[in-house]
Image (cartoon, rainbow, N blue to C red; front, top):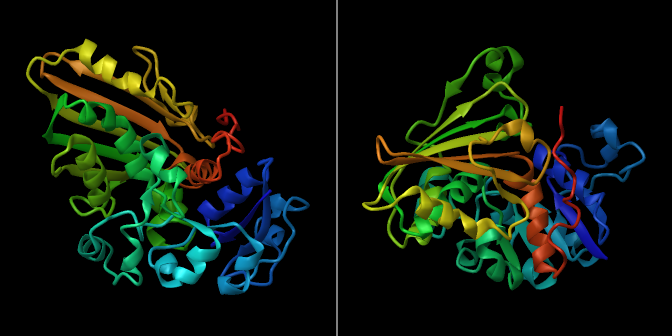
Length: 345
């Protein structure tokens, strides 16, 4: 059995880790930690876990608990994992960080976009960007995983085949994204109150959203060039889910057959579903699951391709992908613990 510890277990991402790991045949949750709810029973924080996980939340001094686990998930805000991580931790356990602390390889870029000093930049080069379908071989050998962000996961997976195949002009790439309110986390914020978001939609982080450099960096690796793009997110009055629509100009001579062939790179990927022709991705079709639904439309009138993706921001965009990474790291079937079908309602 893989012994698991979860730091930040009472946030939305941490709660999803618990939900899926409770179904995992090869996992035992040894401890869950919470700064806010230390010494309280987990099932008193989330009553739906009564008789499923009644253990008390421990404090965040994880050095006291490392000998009890094989892997630690950090479902924490930016900066927390970086402050806690050191060689002693990595010598004892594997670490999967759901924050952005190790996603961006240039520390100055990280500090510029996130507005904090990086507490342990010495581990950035070692960290493997845990986009499973693209970096699977590197994940197998890793002891530190930088779990991708939710917007970047959906955006990169939707655009990656065409960027990798050199079929689109990357200088023309624009990504429009929409997310449910859970993407902002569980902390109380006036802007996320029911009356503030219901019956409305708004853009935010225009030309400044901190997931932008992560998307640019990873698509730059795929396209083998520096990538600068416009990324605009929007807040939608729903609990969970992401829909992205990306636009780019096709390179000269590229046709729909070329585009279709490029997306065949996902033929053997269980969690990435390239939909049938004419079927467009919908958030409800992936709700509460680890699936990403993708499709595209070539517009010959404008010589552009529209790339579309839908996924659950808390699952494939956070906890589900983290568990998929864990499965790969420990040589397990990467679908283990993640076979819950999308929720219909």
